[in-house]
Image 1: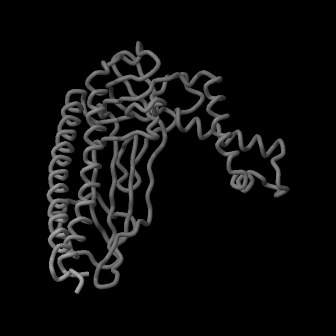
Image 2 (image 1 turned 180 degrees about the vertical axis):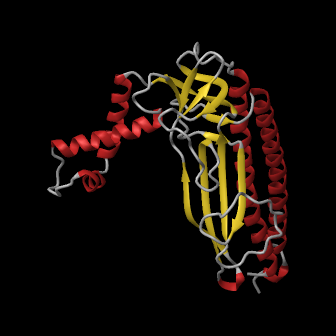
Image 3 (image 1 turned 90 degrees about the horizontal axis):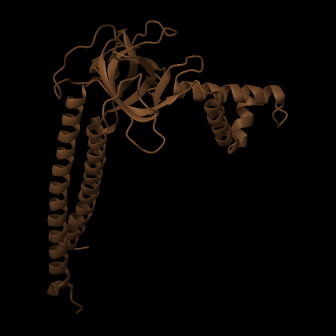
Length: 315
């Protein structure tokens, strides 16, 4: 391959990668624009009078009475939801190191959302959450020895074995906006239907089902083993909808593709944030699309010039 053809090939490959990035930015623009429309067009409801279905609620959050005080895993801060990750820096070949995740977790327990008129449960499984605090800091032990510290980005020099801690929380008492599907989980029929759905999914992988519940290893599930499977499926359903004993309604993951969002922002700030992010995605998509066209045109011009050169003509 001549240098000119190699330049043309490189330009076209780069154009393909940039084009993919432009497509992703465009997809993000439409996704954020759609979510902005849901946030702006879905009226805020009072919890007590909210109808079943997709809702827009605002209120303060607190743990359930059954949970009591909830503390974040890395910093022991009171919260209703947490997400954390611990990574270790390991040096590699040619002095290029990488971060390896050693521990991570996300809370799935429901919490209470209260407004002036009432309260409901919020099950965070499947939600996009905008936390009240998000911290990233470093240390020399598998778990941090103190509170998060402020660090200038791109300044810290990492040694082999250094740990990076990432933690996000929703603090107790924070005022949040919730977009999600409100349903009553006091209905036994609804829980039973979801249990049957979970069991049907598990039955599709018989080997995994038997490995998990066939305690006597006879190749089939007897009555007691099937009861254990049903109990496990019910626990999965209750973790999604917030427990079976409470008669509160619950906001959870949507069933028709609408955004499920829990944000430590009021409605006005949430809408403004979504508009700003959509605008940034649109700008990025336009710039990347223009760069794709430029690179593709340059690559084709280089290719035509290389293939029309007398040097490449047969002797």
